[in-house]
Length: 113
Length: 115
Image (cartoon, rainbow over all chains, first blue to last red; front, top):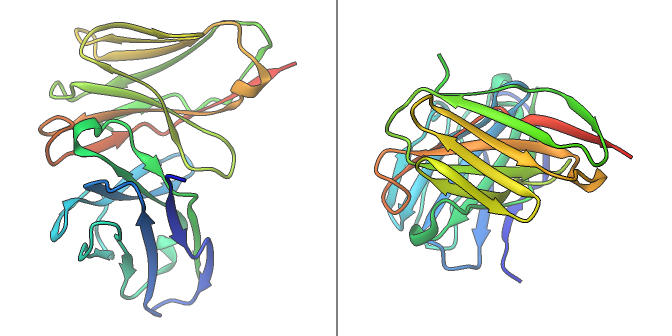
Protein backbone atom coordinates (compact mmCIF):
# COMPACT_ATOMS: atom_id res chain seq x y z
CA UNK A 1 0.00 0.00 0.00
CA UNK A 2 1.33 3.41 -0.99
CA UNK A 3 1.70 5.49 2.11
CA UNK A 4 3.57 8.03 4.16
CA UNK A 5 4.28 6.99 7.72
CA UNK A 6 5.23 9.16 10.67
CA UNK A 7 6.46 8.25 14.10
CA UNK A 8 5.62 8.87 16.81
CA UNK A 9 1.96 9.81 16.36
CA UNK A 10 1.79 11.51 19.74
CA UNK A 11 4.60 12.97 21.80
CA UNK A 12 4.73 14.96 25.00
CA UNK A 13 8.13 16.32 25.91
CA UNK A 14 9.80 19.04 27.93
CA UNK A 15 11.50 22.23 26.84
CA UNK A 16 15.01 21.69 25.57
CA UNK A 17 14.95 17.93 25.14
CA UNK A 18 16.03 17.09 21.60
CA UNK A 19 13.59 15.01 19.59
CA UNK A 20 13.23 13.56 16.12
CA UNK A 21 10.03 12.82 14.23
CA UNK A 22 10.56 10.28 11.50
CA UNK A 23 8.88 10.28 8.11
CA UNK A 24 9.07 7.58 5.50
CA UNK A 25 7.38 7.07 2.12
CA UNK A 26 7.26 3.99 -0.09
CA UNK A 27 6.28 5.65 -3.38
CA UNK A 28 9.79 6.56 -4.57
CA UNK A 29 8.84 10.24 -4.47
CA UNK A 30 11.52 12.85 -4.99
CA UNK A 31 9.75 15.67 -3.15
CA UNK A 32 9.15 15.58 0.59
CA UNK A 33 7.98 18.27 2.94
CA UNK A 34 7.16 19.03 6.56
CA UNK A 35 4.25 21.17 7.72
CA UNK A 36 2.85 22.31 10.99
CA UNK A 37 -0.85 22.92 11.46
CA UNK A 38 -2.13 25.36 14.06
CA UNK A 39 -5.69 26.61 14.65
CA UNK A 40 -6.39 29.74 12.62
CA UNK A 41 -3.03 29.55 10.85
CA UNK A 42 -3.59 26.49 8.71
CA UNK A 43 -0.78 24.44 7.25
CA UNK A 44 2.57 26.15 7.14
CA UNK A 45 5.55 24.66 5.40
CA UNK A 46 8.65 24.15 7.56
CA UNK A 47 11.15 22.58 5.17
CA UNK A 48 11.03 20.78 1.87
CA UNK A 49 13.37 18.58 -0.11
CA UNK A 50 13.55 18.06 -3.83
CA UNK A 51 15.76 15.00 -3.57
CA UNK A 52 18.53 13.37 -1.55
CA UNK A 53 20.82 15.96 0.03
CA UNK A 54 18.70 18.83 -1.38
CA UNK A 55 16.65 20.71 1.21
CA UNK A 56 15.27 24.24 1.46
CA UNK A 57 13.43 26.38 3.95
CA UNK A 58 9.70 26.84 3.89
CA UNK A 59 7.83 29.60 5.66
CA UNK A 60 8.58 28.69 9.28
CA UNK A 61 11.97 26.93 9.50
CA UNK A 62 13.20 28.51 12.76
CA UNK A 63 13.89 25.93 15.46
CA UNK A 64 13.81 22.96 13.09
CA UNK A 65 16.33 20.92 11.17
CA UNK A 66 15.90 18.30 8.50
CA UNK A 67 18.09 15.89 6.61
CA UNK A 68 17.55 13.82 3.49
CA UNK A 69 20.18 11.10 3.35
CA UNK A 70 17.91 8.54 1.74
CA UNK A 71 15.14 9.11 -0.77
CA UNK A 72 12.45 7.47 1.35
CA UNK A 73 13.20 9.17 4.69
CA UNK A 74 12.91 12.80 5.77
CA UNK A 75 13.25 13.20 9.55
CA UNK A 76 12.33 16.41 11.35
CA UNK A 77 14.65 17.35 14.19
CA UNK A 78 13.90 19.74 17.03
CA UNK A 79 17.24 20.40 18.71
CA UNK A 80 15.83 22.37 21.63
CA UNK A 81 12.03 22.27 21.58
CA UNK A 82 10.07 25.15 23.04
CA UNK A 83 6.37 25.44 23.96
CA UNK A 84 5.64 27.47 20.81
CA UNK A 85 6.49 24.36 18.81
CA UNK A 86 3.48 22.57 20.27
CA UNK A 87 1.54 21.72 17.14
CA UNK A 88 0.26 19.06 14.77
CA UNK A 89 2.97 18.09 12.29
CA UNK A 90 2.46 16.53 8.88
CA UNK A 91 4.96 15.01 6.53
CA UNK A 92 4.08 14.85 2.83
CA UNK A 93 5.61 13.54 -0.37
CA UNK A 94 4.98 13.88 -4.08
CA UNK A 95 6.60 13.09 -7.38
CA UNK A 96 8.17 16.09 -9.08
CA UNK A 97 6.15 15.48 -12.21
CA UNK A 98 2.89 15.77 -10.27
CA UNK A 99 3.98 17.99 -7.44
CA UNK A 100 0.52 19.38 -6.91
CA UNK A 101 -0.61 16.03 -5.49
CA UNK A 102 1.00 15.63 -2.14
CA UNK A 103 0.43 12.52 -0.07
CA UNK A 104 0.24 13.32 3.61
CA UNK A 105 1.13 11.19 6.58
CA UNK A 106 -1.28 10.72 9.50
CA UNK A 107 0.23 13.52 11.57
CA UNK A 108 2.23 13.79 14.78
CA UNK A 109 0.75 15.70 17.67
CA UNK A 110 3.57 17.25 19.66
CA UNK A 111 3.20 18.93 23.03
CA UNK A 112 6.16 20.74 24.56
CA UNK A 113 5.76 21.69 28.23
CA UNK B 1 -1.01 40.42 4.43
CA UNK B 2 -1.10 36.65 4.15
CA UNK B 3 -0.31 35.28 0.71
CA UNK B 4 -3.46 33.18 0.80
CA UNK B 5 -6.63 34.17 2.64
CA UNK B 6 -9.46 31.80 3.38
CA UNK B 7 -12.58 32.23 5.50
CA UNK B 8 -12.23 29.73 8.36
CA UNK B 9 -15.96 29.20 8.78
CA UNK B 10 -17.44 27.08 10.18
CA UNK B 11 -19.95 26.79 7.38
CA UNK B 12 -23.06 24.68 7.96
CA UNK B 13 -25.50 23.87 5.16
CA UNK B 14 -28.34 21.34 4.68
CA UNK B 15 -27.80 18.20 2.67
CA UNK B 16 -28.32 18.75 -1.04
CA UNK B 17 -27.30 22.43 -0.97
CA UNK B 18 -24.69 23.95 -3.27
CA UNK B 19 -21.59 24.93 -1.32
CA UNK B 20 -19.20 27.67 -2.35
CA UNK B 21 -15.75 27.85 -0.75
CA UNK B 22 -13.38 30.67 -1.60
CA UNK B 23 -9.78 31.84 -1.33
CA UNK B 24 -7.99 34.99 -2.34
CA UNK B 25 -4.28 35.24 -2.97
CA UNK B 26 -1.80 38.07 -3.40
CA UNK B 27 1.10 36.58 -5.37
CA UNK B 28 0.64 36.85 -9.12
CA UNK B 29 3.34 34.20 -9.63
CA UNK B 30 1.03 31.44 -8.41
CA UNK B 31 0.10 29.22 -11.30
CA UNK B 32 -1.05 25.94 -9.84
CA UNK B 33 -4.05 25.97 -7.57
CA UNK B 34 -5.20 23.04 -5.50
CA UNK B 35 -8.01 22.13 -3.16
CA UNK B 36 -7.33 19.64 -0.40
CA UNK B 37 -9.90 18.00 1.86
CA UNK B 38 -9.05 17.10 5.44
CA UNK B 39 -11.23 14.89 7.58
CA UNK B 40 -10.96 15.11 11.33
CA UNK B 41 -7.76 13.51 12.69
CA UNK B 42 -6.46 12.77 9.21
CA UNK B 43 -3.90 14.29 6.87
CA UNK B 44 -5.13 16.39 3.94
CA UNK B 45 -5.82 14.69 0.61
CA UNK B 46 -5.90 16.27 -2.82
CA UNK B 47 -9.39 16.91 -4.11
CA UNK B 48 -8.75 18.92 -7.27
CA UNK B 49 -6.13 21.03 -8.95
CA UNK B 50 -6.26 23.61 -11.71
CA UNK B 51 -3.72 25.46 -13.77
CA UNK B 52 -4.26 29.16 -14.47
CA UNK B 53 -7.68 30.69 -15.03
CA UNK B 54 -10.84 28.80 -15.83
CA UNK B 55 -13.06 26.03 -14.52
CA UNK B 56 -12.42 22.38 -13.89
CA UNK B 57 -15.16 19.91 -13.07
CA UNK B 58 -14.94 16.51 -11.39
CA UNK B 59 -18.26 14.92 -10.52
CA UNK B 60 -20.01 17.10 -7.96
CA UNK B 61 -16.97 19.35 -7.56
CA UNK B 62 -15.99 22.37 -9.65
CA UNK B 63 -12.83 24.38 -9.12
CA UNK B 64 -12.72 27.90 -10.53
CA UNK B 65 -9.76 30.26 -10.84
CA UNK B 66 -9.98 33.94 -11.69
CA UNK B 67 -6.41 35.22 -12.01
CA UNK B 68 -7.49 38.76 -12.82
CA UNK B 69 -9.06 39.12 -9.39
CA UNK B 70 -6.77 36.56 -7.67
CA UNK B 71 -9.76 34.57 -6.52
CA UNK B 72 -10.28 30.81 -6.45
CA UNK B 73 -13.42 28.89 -5.62
CA UNK B 74 -14.60 25.36 -5.02
CA UNK B 75 -18.23 24.52 -5.63
CA UNK B 76 -19.85 21.37 -4.29
CA UNK B 77 -23.19 20.38 -5.80
CA UNK B 78 -25.71 18.11 -4.11
CA UNK B 79 -23.68 18.22 -0.90
CA UNK B 80 -23.62 15.10 1.25
CA UNK B 81 -22.90 14.57 4.96
CA UNK B 82 -19.73 12.76 3.88
CA UNK B 83 -18.50 16.09 2.46
CA UNK B 84 -18.22 17.41 6.02
CA UNK B 85 -14.53 18.22 6.41
CA UNK B 86 -12.06 21.08 6.36
CA UNK B 87 -11.23 22.32 2.86
CA UNK B 88 -7.86 23.93 2.24
CA UNK B 89 -6.86 25.86 -0.83
CA UNK B 90 -3.21 25.75 -1.82
CA UNK B 91 -0.96 27.36 -4.37
CA UNK B 92 2.44 26.49 -5.72
CA UNK B 93 4.95 29.31 -5.60
CA UNK B 94 8.34 29.80 -7.21
CA UNK B 95 9.08 27.76 -10.26
CA UNK B 96 5.96 25.70 -10.71
CA UNK B 97 5.29 22.21 -9.50
CA UNK B 98 8.08 20.48 -11.34
CA UNK B 99 10.92 22.41 -9.74
CA UNK B 100 11.89 23.37 -6.23
CA UNK B 101 8.66 24.72 -4.90
CA UNK B 102 7.15 26.21 -1.82
CA UNK B 103 3.54 25.34 -1.39
CA UNK B 104 1.31 27.85 0.38
CA UNK B 105 -1.89 26.68 2.05
CA UNK B 106 -4.88 28.68 3.18
CA UNK B 107 -6.01 28.30 6.76
CA UNK B 108 -8.92 26.04 5.77
CA UNK B 109 -12.70 26.32 5.89
CA UNK B 110 -14.57 23.91 8.12
CA UNK B 111 -17.70 22.65 6.37
CA UNK B 112 -20.57 20.75 7.96
CA UNK B 113 -23.42 19.23 5.93
CA UNK B 114 -26.56 18.68 7.99
CA UNK B 115 -28.61 15.54 7.09
